[in-house]
Image (tube, rainbow, N blue to C red; front, top):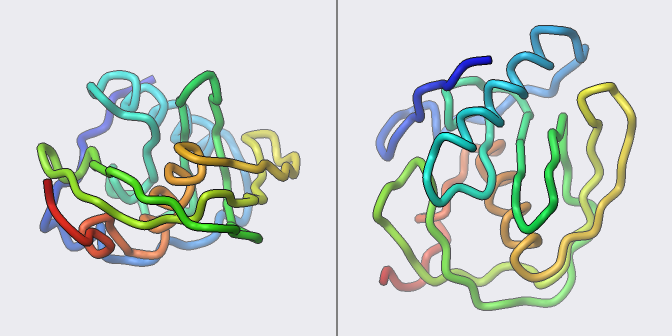
Length: 149
């Protein structure tokens, strides 16, 4: 597999909406593997969305607290409560801020084999899902920061 170059800060691709993946073929599977390799090669990363490597497709990989996922067309279907968070982003190195995110979210997605899944994320995992799925809509965490730290 390959390590892809991260898109940083003012790169306009980070502000674009991603397209739904219509067919999960070998190219998509390779891309998900490249995303995971890129995530693992980057310090302090918990997840990565496709636009962060310049690909406008609805793809996210997560490797956080024992939760390892390759997600195709993920959608948040339910969100509950609120929590105060501290966030950073691989595309915005050395920038951290306080945000408010849902305390619990339900996410529906397809895995790399096209199987449908529903997963509930709470606390840090909920924050992670919200952060990454924002990327798929052209939103970045600095838009939600209430105070930089």
